[in-house]
Image 1 (spheres, rainbow, N blue to C red):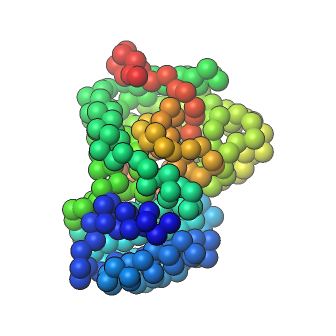
Image 2 (cartoon, rainbow, N blue to C red):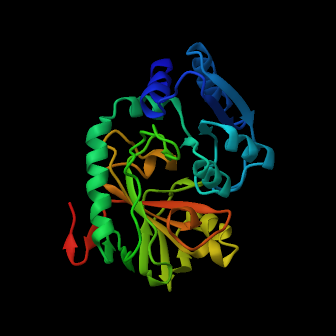
Image 3 (cartoon, rainbow, N blue to C red):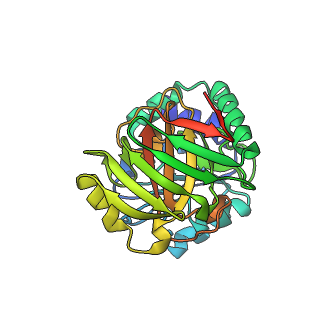
Length: 306
């Protein structure tokens, strides 16, 4: 465990002597955050550990005093139960030059698997996919389970190229990383999405969750208990909005119900709903829910990708 933490601090965050490191955690992840704080101190880094409440869903803003601390830090490690990635606080901190890694739901097993990743190989694969997304206009997403979704990504920019190496001011992303992702043109998304792996904040699905999407928004939800839970969270039209399309590129990632890692697994893709304001979209709401499907068939401008 300590070796994996050393790798994150040294290789992924490139922490330097004298830099201010802010570690954000909550009661659900305090043990792992405490290990990061201890190892950082042993390395001679100035580490400040703060605790925040656990919100119901991903994408909820942290308390104002924590957001203010993020603005004065050189490095921020968000080791939390729910993600701070798609928040205004994170966006302001990166604009101010902070290097940020968000690790919502991180476990010791996830950290150990991540320590085995060939970062350069994953980065090359991610960058190649991101380049394809940048150059494409139309996407057709399908699967054996019944997914048939069409949407436009014309004029949108793909992300994920940093591949968990956050060594320059303003660089940010997940640890573990391993995804090329983009914000679809919101109103363009039409068709059916069948979720057969997992949903953020819910975990592994008990039965396939079938979403009908019309004009970029969820119009109908069918399935088992996971579907009912997901539908209960869509209490605002902005939460029903398709926000993201991403493709996993991490060979070491396992699907366990923890979205931090699930969405990175090679052989999967994910579609998210809610906030995409901070990576090229237009929808801003304190909510971001990723949904993972297995073995997708992805066609960009009429050409399948491997």
